[in-house]
Length: 166
Length: 152
Image 1 (tube, chains in turn red, yellow):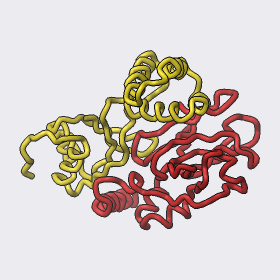
Image 2 (cartoon, each protein chain N blue to C red):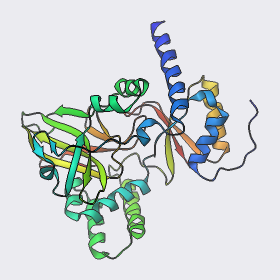
Image 3 (cartoon, helix red, strand yellow):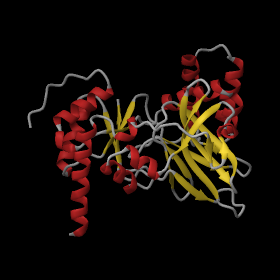
Image 4 (spheres, rainbow over the protein chains, first blue to last red):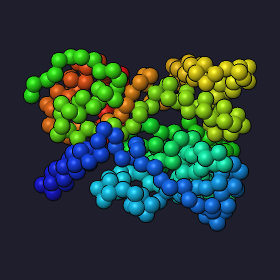
């Protein structure tokens, strides 16, 4: 009975969100402000010499830019903006962060930065709007998603020497 | 409900918009642009044109990545459109050869939210989408959240 009620509530929420947002789900259109000159104590130019600003995505940031229903929709998903995982099996957990950036030419985009012991060890970028992107961990891998309830992602893999997308 | 006559929409977004109007209680939204061969090729072309070294360090080294790099070096003056076309073909060959460039479907696609409704309502929506010229793949167990993949 409880499960049924929860399902009905979710369905009501989905219909309400659809009429609130229009044709596109909020994560297809949201843009985050790109404001910081430092990320985790490192200057932005350490992440990429062409960048001038960046912002790490977080639950708090999302909460500021979405309605309560939209925020809850993200929290109900399995996605996260940051993840810790020892993917390279060296006994130290790497920290995976998603974010958005702006470069010297005012071009924007999204990124995933991988840190280990506070040191940047890899960064993946994708030019375009400074929009939604998040991480999802499955048994085999961490996937970098550009949306929710969708199949648009790239898998982050460790090949024994370095990280790569697939 | 009375369904509209079968006039094929101009594009997939228009089709989904029409479905939303015909099934207003289904809560349908476009949730993703669909992972397609062409879209993957566009992304890879964008990356290699921006910075070849970064492209090579971004992707796991596989034969199709090396093939793209060789083609890029031999065709430096190619336009973006030409590169996308070539990379798309390389991806298609790689996938048919079993490479893990997985989940790529056709050229024009969208992901939409799983419609709200009983099974017969879902079947009606799917039939209507088919009638309008697209096809549906239901993905109830997708890792990123259940959705329908609409292929135009």
